[in-house]
Length: 180
Image 1 (cartoon, rainbow, N blue to C red):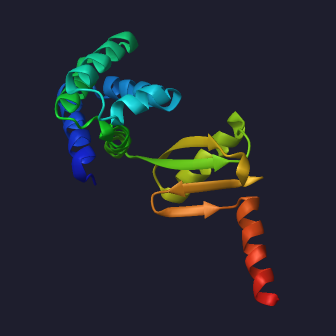
Image 2 (image 1 turned 30 degrees about the horizontal axis):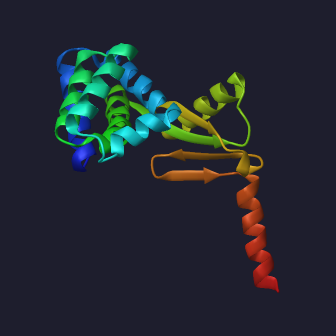
């Protein structure tokens, strides 16, 4: 399921968390770090920039981890990644860690893009429908993409369902080109 450098770190993190019976803590910490990465371009730049030394990156991450209250498993792993100059794979590692945790719990993550924010009722109905279709618990990862104009794009595993108006317009445009 996992491959490459990010996969090896994700697998190690997962095994350590499972062994230490702190899977929930590591999941919460990884979600918090993922949110911080999404909010801070400076943090993303620091992770991927070769300008900073290993020591500077390690110290910066230690300070960030302490400020965020991250647990020792994730904090130590980040320190090791800084020492080995592998911080550029942190986003991929967090994504693969989420997948490993979901697989352990028998969950499937569905990536949902919608033109406007979904209401709680819509979210619950979509999760219920997808669970019935997939046969497992479905966790939704919802993002808003106004360029869709309307509708949804749902991706579960390798299957993708695109009901967006943008896709329908693109299909209509292709058909119109074939006619003329």
